[in-house]
Length: 164
Ligand code: GDP
Ligand code: MG
Image (cartoon, rainbow, N blue to C red; front, side, top):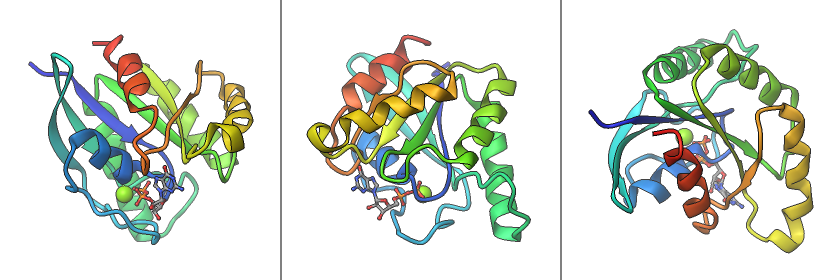
């Protein structure tokens, strides 16, 4: 059956924007308000000659006891269990934050292959150097993307497909 790819990261890093960019249709709601995607959202995707199922999640806020945020975390945990490959997405504008490291620890424990995407790199001239910081997560090469401008998506999917 088709490989399953889950997009995991904190709220507001651009998971739904990336999901829509890959799915090619505005399926998932993109909003400035964290917590808009409470449920898991699925799309059947094709890239080059490969078919896979993509899952968007509401996001993980590791330490929150807020009821909505813990429901989102639960949905993300189910997505992690379901996934064959995980796209871990972070935000270059915010830089590497403590919650990213905590989410990363969860992903390491899952023992699933993880591809690290650093989003909102709308300009390599402006933000390219800030991408290096994410090597500190210790899960390999950070791939710069701009989900909003659809930049770097090919490189990201190539890294994802290498685990199929
Ligand atoms: P999610 O909560 O992780 O699903 O994040 P969303 O996809 O809803 O995006 C959160 C906010 O970040 C929205 O205002 C998006 O327009 C914005 N955003 C997403 N991707 C990019 C990007 O590549 N560049 C910039 N500058 N903003 C982005
Ligand atoms: Mg979302």
